[in-house]
Image 1 (cartoon, rainbow, N blue to C red):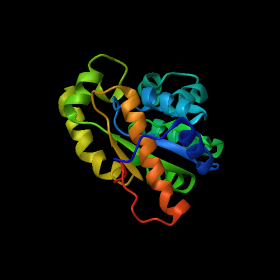
Image 2 (tube, rainbow, N blue to C red):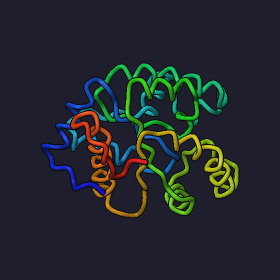
Image 3 (cartoon, rainbow, N blue to C red):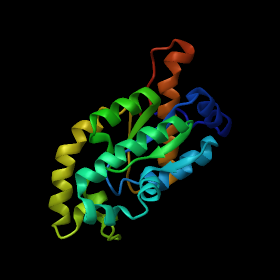
Image 4 (tube, rainbow, N blue to C red):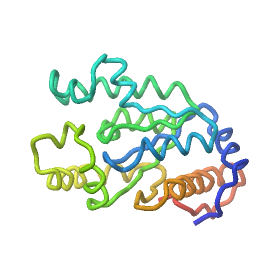
Length: 202
């Protein structure tokens, strides 16, 4: 793990982003929104939640979109919104659990952002999701089995992200520190022509 990035270092990372976004990807319950807000605060750049922007664009909740139009319709709208949001960087952008599965969305994130996978175990995700009842993919199903199936489908694709940080039961600031350290390592080779980038990158 790299040294903790100082406040000045965090804002310097924001400058290094240029017009790019830090894009958080991962499963529902991984903490993308709560950690994303704190990360954006540390970097002094805006935080944007793609799910909220999708709801604004549609004029209905994600659960209502799923119920009225189905998942394919939702995914198409999600992809359009994320491509539009990526033009608004620098920012921290939290995406929905299925967004990174779209190849065009992944390509857009690769072109205009740095992706960070918040990886969490099945146990951690299930514990967190039990507290909420607003997850359309888990309605009327065995949540543990559904999560297990989604993990099998999605984790190999999430692994394409630029950085991976383990989301676990520690203070959110610890996760933020690890993301900042990973970003610092990500930029080091470019800034200093060094080849010893370590930290949270994978």
